[in-house]
Image 1 (tube, rainbow, N blue to C red):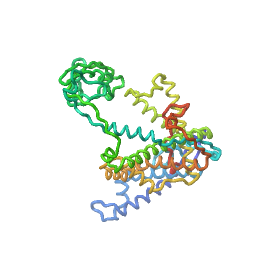
Image 2 (image 1 turned 30 degrees about the vertical axis):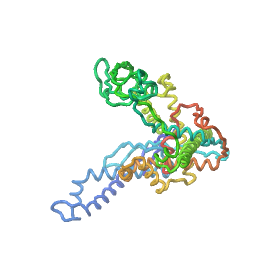
Image 3 (image 1 turned 90 degrees about the vertical axis):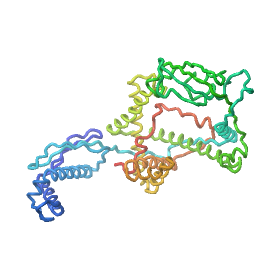
Amino acid sequence: MQVTETLSEGLKRSYTVVLPAADIESRRSARFTDLGKTVRLPGFRPGKVPLPVLRQRYGSAVTAEVVEQSISEATRQVLSERGLRAAVQPKVDLINIDPATDLEFKVDVELLPEITLPDFSAIELTRLKAEATPEAVDKALADIASRNREWVELMPDELGERGAAAGEGVVVDYVGRVDGAEFPGGRATDVRVEVGGPGFIPGFTEQLEGIRPGDTRTLSVTFPDGYGVADLAGKPAQFEVTAKSLGRPMVPAVDDEFARKLGFDTLDEMRDVVRNRIQREYDQLSRFRLKRQLLDRLSEMVAFASPETMVSGEFDQIWARLEVDRKQGQLDPEDQAKDEETLRSEYRAIAERRVRLGLLLAEIGRSNAISVGSDELARAMRAEAARYPGQEAQVMEYFRNNQAAAEGLRGPIFEDKVVDFVLELAKVTEQVVSPEDLAKDPESPLPSREGVAGGGGSEDAP
């Protein structure tokens, strides 16, 4: 094999590789010999098909197979002998494939950068912690009671001359029209609407105040610009609404009887469960804040060139999601006033950061033999399946039959293990804060779509 380096620029390398025709023909002959032992053709005994017949019938297929295998093996050898690690799959272009002459091809490859790991013991972090206070538990219990409220219909003698008041419920039938024509999904019956409450087009529920059973009103509203149905977004509409009955919400008392209705033995047991749930949420948020601090610090401590192909691929994914949000009218508020050039520049910076951190975490894992075991991956698959009650078996079967999907669960596990490894070595102090301070979004010079490319990479990264 003859190898000539034609480009060495930054992380980019190019090589021209020539494989002798004699080597290719030797491989072809060996493949035909193996094929002749197993192939069955009419008129010939098994294993007795003449070589000329095999070459005539399978020559093209065998040549393509041998060429592909030879190129793949030669490419790996080129990288291995030079101690190079490819960032992405090398690009191969055939120069000469004539079976009568040497096989010549070009290899373009972008390499992983050399990464010097920082001193993790020099990293200083603050872990914010919040406690689930009795007041927070009381508020959560009150919210649960509110969600379990019962609507009690108001009788005519209770109403007197008045109509529905804010906070009361109205059971209505309605028909919606735009430009005088009824639109799909604009008709409903027996819908309970909270007067002045959320969940409907702005201005809809407020106009029901004072309505009485049997009354019919025409409500004029305007669909929001970001409404999910594009044909209706931003358009004025009229809804003909007929009230059928009125009611008021009855919020149950938070006591032992209420707890038993929800499956607990006592209110104290329910309080403990709610307190633990709140604390888990606080702890998860605390870890998120600490992890973000760590990634910010690591990003400041390392500097190396990232493979352009990886950065471009990451940017393309981020930009595709942004375009979807833009079309659906869900673009982040801070992005709406920015021009295209500014947005591209900012999200390019995010892509570069994500790739750099992903490569760094992958190198930390590789250097310290951090890996994700099959048992850990199996637990992640079961946890994912548990999110789909009644379909657990189908989800597990999906993962078993789709290796890429299963491997997609490996990245976040690996990332968390690397983060835990670094946190063990870093100097971490704790600071008790209020839940409100814990929930505040930390200031960042970058827009919200941060993170690590590929979920933190994989210990199998090249």
